[in-house]
Length: 481
Ligand SMILES: [Zn+2]
Image 1 (cartoon, rainbow, N blue to C red):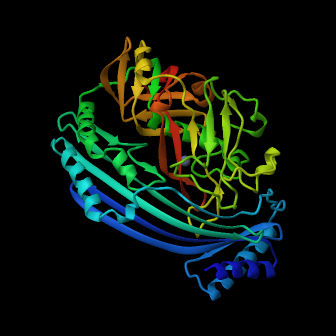
Image 2: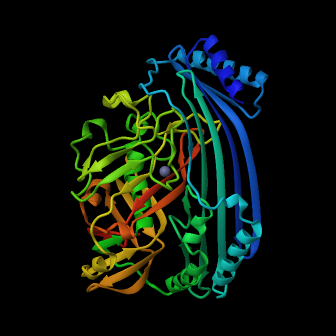
Image 3: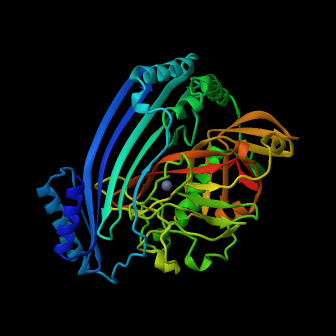
């Protein structure tokens, strides 16, 4: 395999490429789902390689699922041909920021290999949850899913880097949908993470640490309670946003707008462009002074945690927002010069061997504050506590947004008094983060996985984690729609 990888570098260089890299990827996935008592198991194996080149100052990329000498030569030659054709339309030459040569092996850590856990145990867990969720006949849909993913990637570049990486990702979640036949009310409650799912770069221990079975009764009861819950009040109120809801807020209102290709208008698919234009770097007030948000490709367990990105750049940690001031972007080797930085932050990732890498979020997290959760509730005279995400929308510049949570709880005089349904909040990104007045401490902080971030044309999927603790925001518009 190694010889064939180096052969691709030779073939492309001889054909006129000034830069070449090849990624050979092998992956295994196991997805087990149960819907209303019916189990389904999917086991998928993937294999292939992609050759990326710069020739005549432009990118070319070609990929193949067949790793042999003939295909290596054809694919490498095709990548160069595509680059040379693209070069006829170029406006400027691609120039990559310098990166040290890396010869390294990197593995994500885990305790229990999830692929060695018997299938019966996985199905049994989901069936047991399903039984609990559907023990009340008002629960019309119960669905649960566990998924496990192992990926091995071998990367070599014409600059001399040779990097082998392996990660294991584990997780899943479940949801119960309750229906009131008389009123027609439909409500869904899920566990444990962002829109139900939680994933980490770890093994089977992820599943055990979240006590999936032990939370099923509560999830069922909350879905049922929502059927007869009062509506969310309307007006300006203090809100306390749970970590799993805040994770998606960070993703949409800071993650996407700090992707430098969006900022430059080079990429607008799925998530639009960005209000965080380059003149705002280091001087724009993004949030209150307690808001500190860090990007970290080295965060233990994060599903964007990797040793090196697909540019061969070593992962790092840096601030996107420090003491409330916007101060960083997500960059790759190609675009980092635009912000006068001479080193990529290592955010170039592809979603497989047959995709060209582009700037993707790494793990982006809100640094914990000082509050204990119970004290924060006790300190809130009137407000709403919001659970995990139900739906959201945000404009093309990532400014004006509206989020709805699955569940809310009304807080009065420092106490949670009742469940409310369809809690919605709306604001404008910098105004919203400027209203952040309290963040809970590290005991309440969790790293939440987002596994379905879409970007690009053709579309690519990426995964990343966002750490957050419950936080309080002052006088936010609630109860719209
Ligand atoms: Zn996204």
